[in-house]
Image 1 (cartoon, rainbow, N blue to C red):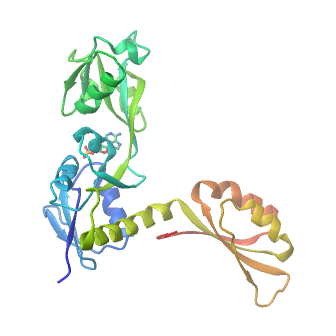
Image 2: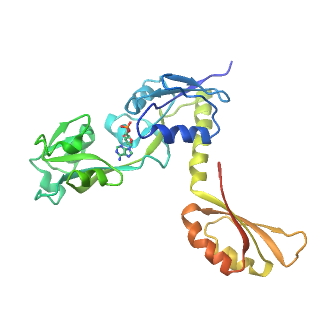
Image 3: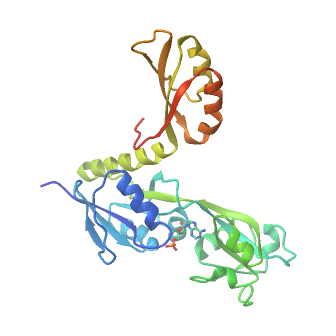
Length: 287
Ligand code: AMP
């Protein structure tokens, strides 16, 4: 009988939908219902455990699940020594120290003597200690950004993505403690059959993360423009060049381009004589 491994994933909150989307794009077939904690994957020996995002690390550390997806900030906050197998490039945010707009504080050193409210008390206390700043950490579970208004604290440390929530609450960022994103975690040194399954899952998920950053670009071009076109296409891999069936003066060129570069590259390719340009998404990519 083959071994089934477990992956703990968020059952609600910001990381749930992008995590489910990642798992589905990686080809896992499962039906998630609102209430089920444990969901079998139909086409892989894998069971998904839908749990609170901040319980994921604990379940992996205890060996209840071999893999987990959570925020890097939550891993830091638990202080658990888990392996970050892969950064998943969603759920990006910064753990930021901020003060009310009217505060005289401008640098981290100015936090000395202040009361700092946060839902990340361990990370915050460790950071201030490392920086030699004697601030008092006040642990709150939520609504951290209103703590200064309620005079519960003089400053806060909270997660920020766009910064609009802080702005709405009249807060000004002063320092970044940590850059976070969703990560795939396991215990260290998982070997044997389980290790092979963990590695297989990690490969499938990272292939999706890598592919999301890339586009497949196809075009026809004059054969004598090939050198110029190769110089325009960024990246290390040589493009594939295929002769056209009925026109020896032209070739078809296939290439993988960074998604961020596509907008700048297309007009240059057109100017170099490329035509019939197609830009396609890539589903999965393994180097
Ligand atoms: P949840 O509290 O379940 O919605 O999930 C919170 C997790 O989502 C955090 O621990 C972060 O890893 C991630 N996240 C990404 N952006 C933000 C944000 N702007 N505020 C709070 N959490 C964020």
